[in-house]
Structure formats: C-alpha cells, structure tokens
Amino acid sequence: MESIGAITESTLGSNWLDPLGKPAEVGESQTERTEHCEKHGEFLSKIVGAGKPWAFWTGCEACHEEQYLEQERISREARRIEHIERLTKALGIPLRFKGKTLETFLPETDDQVQVLQQAREYVADIHDNLATGKCLILVGPPGTGKTHIACGMLYVAVAEQKSGRFATVSEVIRDLRSTWSRDSNVSEGDMLDRYVSPRLLVLDEVGCSFGSEAEKVQIFNVLNERYNAMRPTIVISNLDINGLKEYLGERVIDRMRENEGRILVFKGQSWRGRGIVSTPVEEERALSAYELTQRELRAPMSPSITNPGFKPPRKLPAHLYQEQ
Image (cartoon, rainbow, N blue to C red; front, side, top):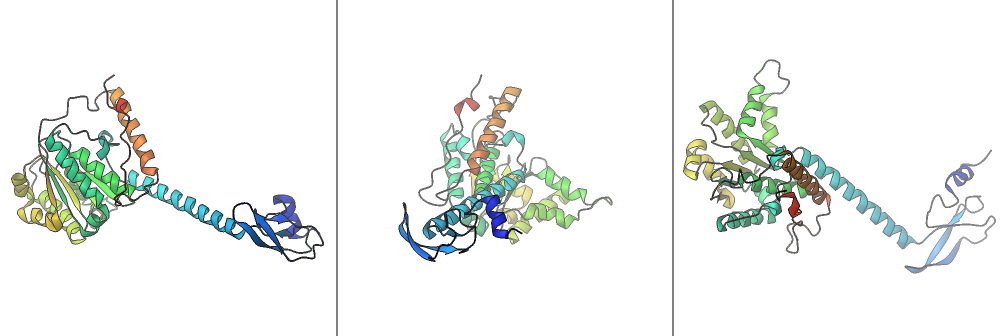
C-alpha cells in the first residue's frame, strides 16, 4: 500500500510541501547543507522526510517570507476591492449622476472653482471629517452642480472604504411611511437606521416642496439621529440659506455648522439643457464614465488620499462628454 507521501508525490510532484525546495535522493545521509539563492545568497537547507520517496531539501527562507507577504498583499487588495464594490452598489446614486466625480466637474466660473476647492479640502481630510461629524450644506439654484459635487465626495468616501448613501427627501419620507403599513416587515426604527448608519449621507432636494409638519419632523429625526451619532450629512437645497433655515429650523442649521461645518454657495446659470445626459448616445457616455470610475476606484489608493503626496485619479476621457 502506497504511503500518503508517495501518493501526494505522484499527484503534486516531489516538492509538494515546498515549491521552492529541491527533491532529495533516496538514502541521503545529510540532514543539512548549504545552498545558494540567486537573490539572497547562501542559506541553510534542511532535509524533510529523510528516507521517504518524497523527501526534499527546503528552499530559501527569505524567498518564502517574500512569497508569503506578497500573497497577503494580494489577498488584502482583493478584499479591499470587494469591499469597495459592495459599498459602491449600496450608494444609491441615480444613473444620471453615476461616474460623476470631483475630477469630472469642470468649473466655468470663479464661484464654481471656489466650491470645487472647498469640496476637495473636505475630502482631503475625509477620515477626520467623518470621525468628527463635519457636515456640509450645498445651496444654490437648480442645475449648478450641487449634486455632482456631492456624489463626487461620496465616491471618495467609498474609495477610502467608508460607507455612504445618496437619498432624496421624498425617498426618505416614502421609506419611513412604508413601515406604517400592517404588511410591512420592517420597523420604522430599522428603516430610520438605513439612513443613520452610513458614515456619509447625501440628502438631496431638501425644501424642494414645502411638506407637512409631520414630514419635516421625519427629516429632523434623520438629521438629529445622525448628529447624535457623529455622522456627517451633506444637505443639498435649491433654497438660499435663509429659506433652508425656515424649512429645517435654525437649530438644525446651527448643529450642521458645528465642528467648522461649511455652507457652499453655488451660483450661476443652470447647466441643464446643455448636453447633459438626455439622449441614448449621451446615456451610453454616462455609463462608460461610470464603468471607468469603478476601475479607478478599484485601483490601489496609494499613497492615501489623506497624504500630501496623493495625486487624484486622472480625468475621464474628453470624448465621453463631447457632442458627436
């Protein structure tokens, strides 16, 4: 009856225990010998399984250590990519804004240059800002790039393996009210947690319609729970800051401005109607931009985005945004 070693040798080869080792001759009397590694020089090799048909001499320990570390690096990178892909799918960013990063935001005015710079400053310290609950308020006329900028900041958070979520006020209210049904399998508390638990929440269309007091209370609950949990929120509104104070209440605005929370004021004319996704060809461009963004998110973020030496991802190809 063949030994386990012999069976394994016939299946995997004589160096099945040590891919870097060398097969030993049957009857070898030595137990140790000096070998030479082209990379690390001389090393002490030991015989394993002396007298067995599958006996072998061990390989270079330094090479083994390097192989182990490389395999660990590859495994960590694979887990990182898988984690980022899961976080990206959970963002809930609408198709129109998928692939919209800070790098693809092309400012046309000095005001837009300024708000883009403020957004970049926020994500440059993304870890600290998420830890301290530093909020942002984006206000200005429709179509001036508020949602684009906010989605770009969400993508940075995900690239740093932090959870995020995009939602509109109407979506939040609809989801919370859906739990009132007798047929609902989700409690209102669990639904509320869906918007409280992400490390960064973008809440769009705040004040878009003057809802009932009950609706305002629901939005207040979301913002208040996030405030208590030290989780920052990026609020987007077409109202000016005074109108937003009237809608949310001055107490909410004051809380959002704690820890140096900023108000980013967007000015200028609407970009809508100027070639933004509206035709099948342009939809295809947007999807291509999104796919390329995913590849860039999966690329190693080294050095870290919080390091001074960080270089932002390259801009997406110009042809994705040009008229054809």
